[in-house]
Length: 287
Image (cartoon, rainbow, N blue to C red; front, side, top):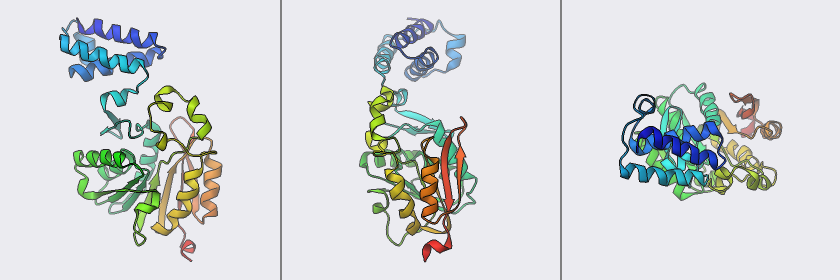
């Protein structure tokens, strides 16, 4: 079969399954490029390129998975984030563009040489991006999931950052030594209300790990643990950065102020939604 014809068939299958037309076209193209090792240029300039029977069969299998709403990144096993490519599986959340806002905001405050703690690290995309674009920084990533930490460690090795990172399994600060201190703590914790998860798109509710989504009854369970807990592990003047749901800024900001953080700020993402809350540890918090 010709390349262009197979692409059109894949697009049609996904659109008939209810996937929005623009997304169906993109996913059909990305999957075909993944199978054939091609680029957009092939579709634009060489639609008549013959596709081998092996490639055609592999492509149809992947299209069938996407038709069942398996996320594209879980099918291909990779996701681009902050200009880097990360391995992802169903054991970790798929890195999203909204979270790039969190990494970019933190980078404004890095001078080099900082020690960073990344709670609920998942694929390690936040911590590894910060280390990739700074000098002399080191970091610890923690997660309750051992499988997630295996993926994070593989991502670190592939990016040449294994010696600058440590990956530890445990519930938030339980994986950190009581005498350890960090210049910066960051987390994109589970923050979706439990009752909301079943109503989300199947790509999220069925395939992404619930452990990384469920923020409890009101979505604030992890913030209530992370914010006061971080005080003991930040140096004075250290910063805490948290990704939040778009309707959680007021509550999370209040939790940070009540814990003694100052210069607490809310930062919006590129879509204009509240996405990040950050604050600075005060010297008074050590008293």
